[in-house]
Amino acid sequence: MSLTNLLNPLLKKASWMSSDDIQPYVFVRPENSIERPGSLHVTDWFQNKKPIFKNPLHLDELPFAEAVYQLEWKSFGDKGMAIPRWAFYDCAAMPGFVAGFAGRTKSLPKKIVEMLELAPGQEWCPLSLFIIIPTMHKGEWVAYDLCAINPILPREQQYYGLGFLTKAFALWYANVVQCSGMTQWGSPSLKLHSNYGHLEMIGSYAPLHTHAKTMTYRCQVDTNCWERFFTKEEDLAFLEKYGITDYIVDPSNENSMIEMQKRIQNNEGPFYLSASDISKNKLTDAFRVYQSKKEYT
Image (cartoon, rainbow, N blue to C red; front, side, top):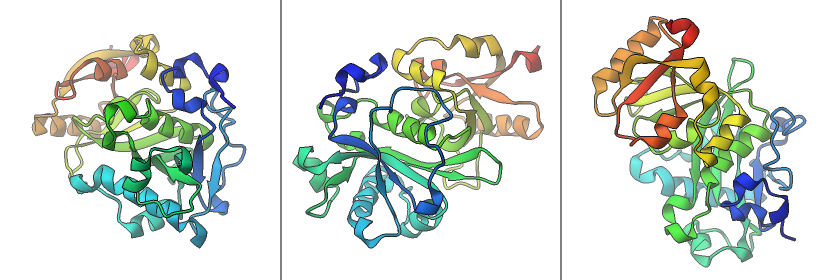
């Protein structure tokens, strides 16, 4: 049965969302099950999808997990940032929440199934992955990993919006209030992460990380921001609340990251980045920094 007529018009280009052969999966141990999933944030994007539940502690789910490993490795292995198996188990499957979208294997292009080395006889094949881990700060989760099959597929075979909708589904399903995360300056992932809520920089330079040129962010999850990822409309609520400062962060200038980090440490913030700026500008351009008009005026 097609769900095309039931889809939010914003998801028209994401036609795969109307297929019963692609469903979200939730890969968590029973003790980590979410109470009243999807009850906090108002959105109709996922109301007609039926999550597939998988237990990472069950041996029967190993073939699915192996395909997840392949997806993650092909996404980040060449960047030296693939998750070691022990870290996936110790830091994600045990304490956290793992979710994504999966395709019914028989309906997928053979190329995808072969690339992910999915074992024969499996009904579902993972197409994306998002990991969030709860923190000591009540209501806050850390985004640990996000990847999707799209970058390793020809453009004409990609699933429109898959990466963005994967994170959106997990935040919605898990009732996440505040999401923090890390991404590298100049990374295309910034175009996704900046659209789940107004993006606050809580760190602009991270020498503790493998890649020091890493920005640490957090946002209060807001489904109104999600829509603008697809519409590309200006976020008027952001412009009403925040004003442009004289500060910038230049992805090609490490000193600018360090200077901003010092301002953050000196409690001169909070500082924000504009999703509209990130969407319109090149990722190699300098990022304009915003601040609450109450703080800045």
